[in-house]
Image (cartoon, rainbow, N blue to C red; front, side, top):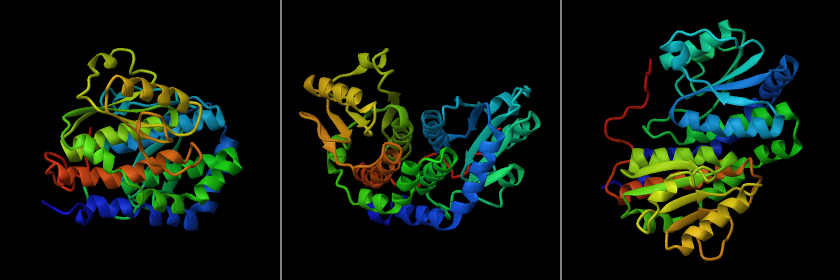
Amino acid sequence: MPDAAATRMYQEAREARERVQIQIDRDAPHVARIAAALRDFKPRMVLTSARGSSDHAATYARYLIETSLGLVTSSASPSVSSVYGARQDLSQCLFLVISQSGRSPDLLTAAAAAKASGALVVALVNAEDSPLAAAADHVIPLRAGPELSVAATKSYICALAAILHLVAHWSANPSLLDGFARLPAQLDASWQLDWQPMIDALQPAHNLFVLGRGLGLGVAQEAALKFKETCGLHAEAFSSAEVRHGPMALLEKKLPILMFAQNDETRPGLEALAQEWSARGVHVLLAGREVPGVKRLPMIEADAAVAPLLFAQAFYRWAATLSVARGYDPDHPPHLKKVTETI
């Protein structure tokens, strides 16, 4: 059995701090110029396009753009253009495509179709020499560096950071700009947090729910994927607003719940659910503030827009640890490869 700290997943996730620092050092003027171009362009709406972990970053982008800029933001299905060949009217729309490799055929087709339909294409991509970067009107590099583990970690955090950076400049929001500048130190502090209770609760588990809401929903989706991918755990992600609409019927004492609660308008509802289910004997783990009667996973106090990055940083360390504790190798998930080339 490998040592968790020796796995690529663990080591690459730990690099997120320095990779975000590179974004800060190299990209501020470039991102500010793209933000100015977006203000001039005045998009009527934003469409995101991504797969896997990048699509979870797009969920974060949707909530951040809608709450910071008031622009309707929706996820575009790549298959509409890559499989169905349908043409859409995307005039005066921003098409935000997120990819680590920049080589997935369906994303390339979707970006080309969006551009031909009148959209402005902005690519957030780790591989700056990729076909997707060449096809976009504007490119924001993720700066994650090589990521060899099949499970994306630092590239996901770098995608969230690039989104935060863009929206901070686009909205000219001093609070978001300050939050972005302080990210490296907070990521470092998040890496040091003790989430051993997650190992204790989930090492014997078979299934779980992962909940978030608003800005925290994307990291709940990402955590559920990583549990499946690296830990052999069947995990399902839900918005806390949706979980009462059917999934709650599955709740029992043997089904643990992991919840992410950033400090914004969604926090009281998440905490109330955590207390309700804990009182019923459900094993609830809450990443956030202290809540009576609920097992807390400690978190760094931060702006709600920054919190999902800190959740992810703490989670990745302990997900790699859980993977090894359950007898898996997080660097070599069964049946998976690094670049998935969907048509």
